[in-house]
Amino acid sequence: MSGECRVLVTGNFKDWESETLQSTLAEVIWFAIENPGYTDDTSTDPDPTGKHFFGEPGMRTIYRRTLLIAPWVNPYKALDDNNDGLVKDANTGLVFKAVPGLVRMLGNVPIEKAIAATIAFQDRYDMSVRLEWDHSIKAYKIMANTLGDLTKRENRFGHFFYRPQVSTGKVVGREYPFALMGNGSGYSSTTAQISFVDDPDTNMRPATSAKATANILSGVVVSYTVDPTKPGNQYQAPPFAFVDAKSTTIATARVMLNDDGQVVRLVFGPTPLWGVRRGQDVMMTDALAFDLRVYDPGAPLFASRKVPNSNTDFTTDTVLTPSDPGWLDAYMSTFNMGGGTGSTIGTSNTKAQVDYLYVGQGAYVDLGYGYNSRYTPPTYPGPPALPSPVYGPLFSSSAAPWFFEARPLSDVYLNSRPNLSPPEPKDSSYLATGYAVYDTWSFHYENNGVNEDQLRYDGNKWQVVDNSIDEGTNGMDDVGAYTDTYLQGPTNPRLGVDDIGEHETAPPYDKPLRGMQVVLRAYERDSRSIRQVRVTQHFMPE
Image 1 (cartoon, rainbow, N blue to C red):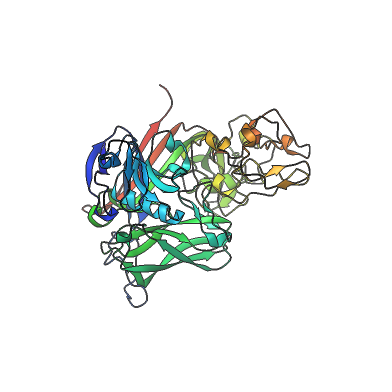
Image 2 (spheres, rainbow, N blue to C red):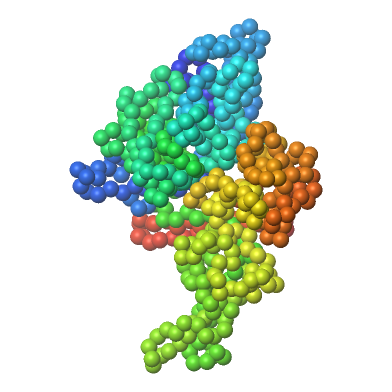
């Protein structure tokens, strides 16, 4: 793999040069964006992208960014005239060490400016980098990642998760859980202003700034609107955008630019390259679907069948997996055990009954496939017709589903014990509000000197504690949080020093990936047909 890296670091960032370097490792980001569509009435709904700049409306474009892992890169070494390892930055006047991995010195700038500089850097160079504060010189710097650095969510591409000052009345900056994308929650108004922050290099400032708003429904950001009369102009790199309003959970915003450096669209997740690099990240155009699925050995399968006249005279139509449109009806049906007394369909002369025969488990599924607005809460087993215990009769002798629940839509912390007396307040921080996320996670949150859950039980009440306590690794037997109802109760269970119930964080799904499946569906213009392909990769040993 190869990418571009800067080799000239003197002068303004806008004028830095680049060269090709190679690495056997990379941070790879795949994403798809639906092409925006606009009406023909330019007076009420103009197309700021300039005649479908991003492609035909309704279609999707699949992108890929390949960011090289190259921690040995040391561009500032060339400026070490005295060969003493020290370099003086011409812009900030800072004297610092030219060490491997240091790719840009930012100086003592606000955190939002440092984030904007990181976005600008990765817009120009294909390197996996992170933002870091250097306490010795009181300055932000951009460092090249190692594989170890990428185990931490905050070091990955786009995981900034910035909370503005207006949200709390004090400077907060980035915070856990460092989501790549999310709709946020707890916004009090129906709209909110979007703030745009430029790269701190003065030569990176746009000629005019853009203006946009966040559209909010029930406290959640559902979309963004760019003012067509103020899209900005001559942005040298995508600015850092954020919803400048108070909220419980943060909504993410990412900027899409056209070739004139105008802000033409805001989305929640990653955005494509633009300008001279436009198209370098495009993998497929005219795509209708780009679906990533994981293998769930406990996913229930149903066979729909018609019973014309009796319970013994039936025909099986098809087997339904959670990815099929009719699966939810089968799962919600009270006749999903194949009892033969299902819904009556057809006319009086051709009456037939339909039920759903449970035929097994195991399928490639979407994360959180059990979540649907037709029933709440999104927890397994869902339908009240399936009795407990042990997940009802369907699964009394089978494995429970792994990825049924939409975990990021519920409490991600283990510390949510409503049965305690007094009950612990529910935490409102989510991994990615509105999205289902799989993450291999990192244990460093349990020994990083930061108390991510912010709560501690002192025997009488739950309270915010000192921000330096890691309950799961502090060598003490603290009150644990457990998913088993038997262990919750008012007894304040302690099951040993630093047991899993004392952890401050938890992965959205604590199950391994046994396999993945990619479904690609595209429109072929020549034959005017739709083609679909599935690519499956299992991770089990042969």
